[in-house]
Image (cartoon, rainbow, N blue to C red; front, side, top):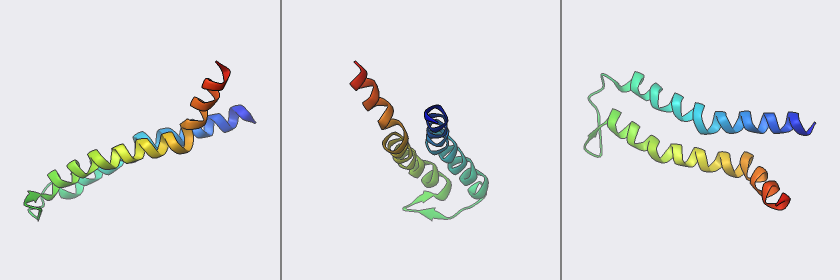
Length: 79
């Protein structure tokens, strides 16, 4: 049960930290590639990609907090 639980946590961590930002960035490129709308004076595509710098950092932080933090605590206790 422990190994299955750990495998699920690693999968969820991967999805949150890699898959979601990947989909977010490339879906924006697909959706906004021909758009001429501006957000704060920037083309919406540039704004979208710049926004995902921060959202990716948030996703990485959440993945560590919810799924990987327990692994680090366990490793420190074992030493």
